Length: 60
Image (cartoon, rainbow, N blue to C red; front, side):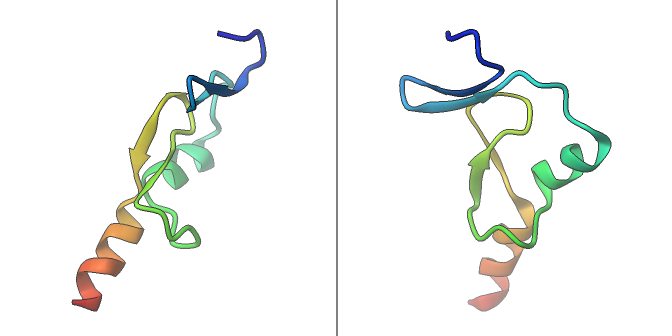
């Protein structure tokens, strides 16, 4: 991987910066983001945004 603390490797996002408490919470519940699969706040890959998931389930 690159020496940058955040970016993409093989098309998959990564972020090795230590998240704040607020960022940890937004990593799993971010009502302002429509994506269910959002880039993780720490680590490599994607995580689930439960706010977007709940919003889509309620629309049905």
